[in-house]
Amino acid sequence: MIQLPPGHGRGRHVSERISMTTTHLSVTQRLARWASDLQGSAIPDTVRALAKTSLIDTIGVSIAGSRTRVGGIARETGLQAGSRGWSTLFGCTTRVSEQTAAFVNGASAHALDFDDNCYAGVVHGSAVIAPAALAVGQKVNACGKDLITAFVAGSECEYAVGAASKNILYEQGWWTTGVLGPIGACVAASHLLKLDPEKMSSALGLAITGAGGTKACFGTDGKALMAGRAAEAGVACALLAAQGARGPLDAVESTNGFARLFNEGVFDLAAMDGLGSRWFSQEPGVDIKRIPVCLSSHAAVDALMNLVATHNIRLDDIESIVCNVPPMVARNLVYNQPETIQQSQFSMQYAIAVSLKFGSFTLAHLDEKLLNDRELASLMARVQMCTGPLWDDAELRQSAPEGAEVHLRLRDGKVLQFFRATARGSVGSPLSREEIGDKFLACATPTIGSDPAASLLSRLDALDGEILLREIFEKQTAS
Image 1 (cartoon, rainbow, N blue to C red):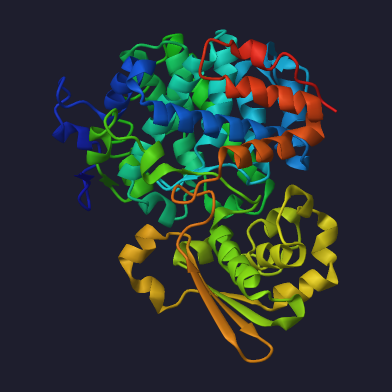
Image 2 (cartoon, rainbow, N blue to C red):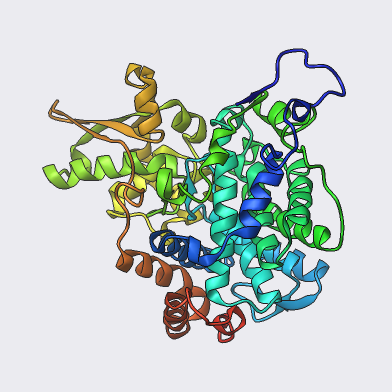
């Protein structure tokens, strides 16, 4: 593990203590060497299947996100500033440059907070990597199987850096999707551009030194737009390196680099060692969201709805609900009385109240009108969130980072309790193939229509093959 000592001298670099030989490469060189050499045949079928699922899910939520206010802002801005090209804008028939498409589709993919999550860095990986890879893949006229290989390369490199950060980055308040996202996007784009290890190292150096983002963006347009900017940055850095631009090889190890400035000088090099033999998309894995709000509320919602169904509880029976959650959840869900839809996506109270009233939480429930619903307000007032002694156990926080112990008190004095470590859709409780397809159709149909959505899903099911990316999106229409 790299760890800079306090007072490390100005002008010195951690990389000075690491011989840059073929056996001791810088972090960017190690990532670039592995990613540029990665062949599709070296990726296990199970990993490729997981990648295809993430791509289908991300495309679906991006199509849905293109209808949001912030998705529309990103699209109009991109169309005004961007140039024409080969790359698709979801929910729009216009083809644009790869950088513009990466930005707009990245913002749309995260606009509804319905995209996937990985605990290797606590990062929204696919919302940034998929738009970048799709945009560049269309530019170079790549086929679906090449897209999947590039997507896996980008994902595994980003998650490796995330794992090496040991979550210090996230705990300090950095928004890891903004900081780590350009890494994954850059690697995926570089792989499709067929950059050699030297050029990919430069691209990564540029991406890492230019990365940033804080969790102050939560509950605002900034969160979705930052995802788009991370995707765009990754593509731009790959294109720059392809033209000969050079970035710092020691972007992680430098005294003024990633490890010290973002991560308290800590960087676990062991996370790099397993590339190609262990797969972060399998362990810790990627969680697919079932409901369109911050993942921090999902386990509590699942636990509560289990109690409601098991005990046939009516809304009038409920006196109070206490959600005992780990510190991460309490820090993320900061809006007890949300005033906007974006704030409602970071509100335990809103997620619980909507699920109770309607029996489910769908995209239709992200509605400004519901913020003034009296029955929802009454339910929200009965919901409390706390972090109790249960979460003093470090092993439990590790195994259930966004888990919940729900205490449901009824008006007759009875108290019911249920614990859930992870939510449905997580690695341990994955959504079925049918549920993934249903989610895609629910996301895509309002934007492009029922038949086009079903046709697009059918083409995406054949993604890991020779089908060209330009052909996949040829028939996309906007309603």
